[in-house]
Length: 492
Image (cartoon, rainbow, N blue to C red; front, side):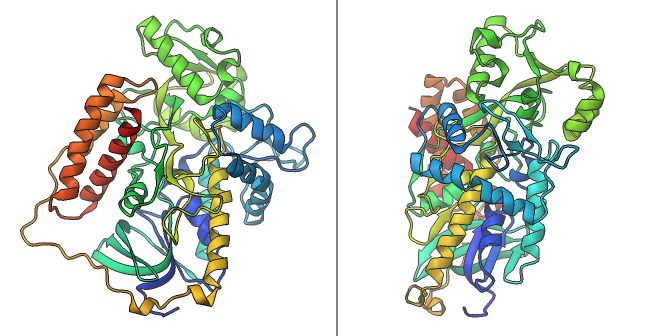
């Protein structure tokens, strides 16, 4: 390809596991530009605590059929069977690749890979690095990507707009020095979820649904955006917008859920008790909250002992100490919180969207593997499997000379700011978050959803039709308004 720095074979937006693993899996002869919205290590993937679910040898009591069945049960049997088959069958090879690049999964005293248990799983199949698996996996993939001479990572680069032009795409990117225009033959959206559309979320600050909004504007199919997962055990200090996650593996290792009376209650709602799937546990907590008139709930794992807890959950243990809580001696305050998106940009089993040449991987995509509710620790696995598949498909297409096109003739797609334009009104993002928290949290409020849809539609229309400075505030507000609009449109 042309050596012009504004011409690339592949543009990848996002530096979570999905985006980075796609870049890692592309061959050295393909020039790749990876955009990090802020710092390259700021992403939802790095916040993942539990691990990666997989059936990986040697194993005596587990198989891909069991993994499939557990995923189907958690997803209400609404999963895409073709995508799910790909997920569970390619899991082992992705675990091996992670080990090969140096991911330090926990092992027992004999050096055997340790597997933990999480809600909805019938077997211990979660590979983990203490309670910070996402950070370990993301860091090791990032290190491997940085060693590749064909990949350039651009920090503090916000993808603002994208357009299908000529034989590829034009992209408008906001950098620290202003807007730049780049062109690429193929594009991969790996921009994560929509957590910041809620008042409270476990997601990082960058999770504003930018890739979904951009794909929607380009005409890509968006599917099941209302399938939002609320994690039942976010740390509840009733103040912070970004809630620290108390990993499901804490319950997997034996923690009890207690209500405001310090009593276990899950037996009233599901025979699987604390290890029921996330949607079941979250709804149970809300129902129990209404029955008791209190939003005070706790995790209790004190009986495991302080030494064990400090060794098994060092990140959670240390965080709770900063909050004045010793989890070896005290109860952990928790409450459900927005956590994950099962819907998104609709893709096939090769991560291809309905727009030719455009791919989506990770949380912003809708592969259908999760059905109505994601099984714990299938998210990092999904990003790995379908990131790898996107890279393989691009590699096959890009090697075909007939499909190469002449990118030097593609028209410029540059942002020119009109004169005398204003910044967006203050408070729009806060207003959108309040709408979603009020109308669509765990157990939806249909009337509030109808009213919220009208408000979100009005905000979206104003941002779409008005002339504003295209800066970070504008892009994120437009993305959040688009996400709220699409979510509530499905609900009503």
